[in-house]
Length: 219
Image (cartoon, rainbow, N blue to C red; front, side, top):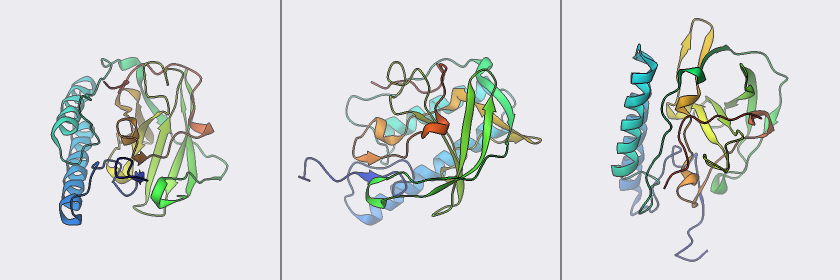
C-alpha cells in the first residue's frame, strides 16, 4: 500500500483502540496502555454504580472525552460520537447457557486468523440469542459482538460490541446472571478509521430485531 493507504492494523494489536500513526514504538505503546487503563477504570465505575442510567451517562461522557482527546483514539478529523438516550427496557439479566462447541476464525488484518471458541449463549428476551466467544490466543477473555436490524441504518453497518473482557468492557454479573445492557453497545475502531480490521459479528451474533440504543452512527 502507499503512504496514503497504510496497511490495516488489527484490533488485537491496538487493544481494540488504536492510533492512526505510530511515530515510535515507545510513544505508541504508552498511548495504548493509557487508553486501556482508562477503559478498565470506566467499566469498573459502571459495575459499581447503583443507577444504570446514571452509569450510562457517565460512560457516554468518558467515552466522548477519550474519543475526542486521547492520543490513541481512532478519531479522524470531523468525527464525533453519537449515543441514543438510555432506555431501561434494553437492560437484562441473562444466565449463560451451554452451547455446542464450535470455532470462529475471523481474519483480523496483520494478526491473520484469530481463533475464538464458543463458550456459551445468552438469550435476550424478545430479541434473540448471542453467542459468547472465548479468546484464548492472547489476553484470555470473553467477547460478544452483535449486529441487529438497525445496522447500516442508524448504527454501524458491520455491527457493534457489547462485551470484551480483555479490553475491560465488562458489565458484570448479578448472582448467576450476566448483565446484558444493550445501552452500552459501542462501535469498533474500524467504524471510524478503515485502517483498523475488527472481528465483526458472526451468524450466531446477529439479531433479527432492532437494538436502537447504544452508540449510533458517528459523524
